[in-house]
Length: 300
Image 1 (cartoon, rainbow, N blue to C red):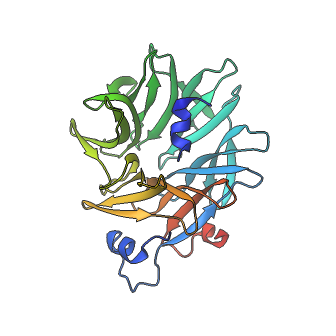
Image 2: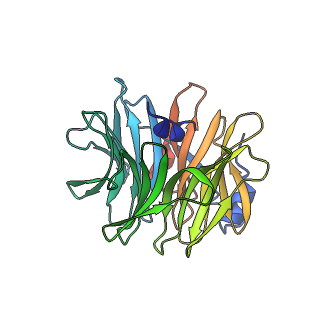
């Protein structure tokens, strides 16, 4: 497994009163946030990586043979996504129109990003790159962010109207773009030249670091049009936790009973998807939602 791919897989109880307040819900409201596990039937491990504004979820899973497949979850139904000719496929981004982005490995063991529009797959390869491991996210305008690698390290990128732009925070030695809003705010994470790991926000041409107070490392994975940001951080004991950043305040997200939790995406309604490590040693996706009629909640 390549180092850049492992980065995503390294990846208590949530304080529901605090999250209610941050998401604009009264603590006394009956529709408090509720967790639901997302497991693709027959999979050994499942990742939930993106939730769009209409509640559809994209991610990937491993089958019993260890092969990775992307999926789309809509109206309670899973649809597998495999790039033709690939040996592994994963899905990490989806916009309201249902366009899906992600990455795949070809038969020659080279990594590429991709865009799926309808039934059409288009490779996303940064010109001159050794590999483009992931097209991480696509916004409603069709702008795509992700990561590409040269011979020395990896860099974030933006593809807008077919034109690629390099995105590297100041003092970065490795960078990965993971999210983009409809208005173009970009988030991601990077390692600085001292090997410290930070999240970042790129807004109107300016970079801001995002670091959970007291954390040993912080990664940012998703953002929404309201300015909410989600990601993961490590504590002093080496445990991974998810987080929500809203209005300058951090709230920890831990799937109940999990050994570790990450938060990957938040939609405009405040619904969050991510990943947790169960006591069975396997990885599971989850949905954190306050919509009690969501069909996924029956899977809790």
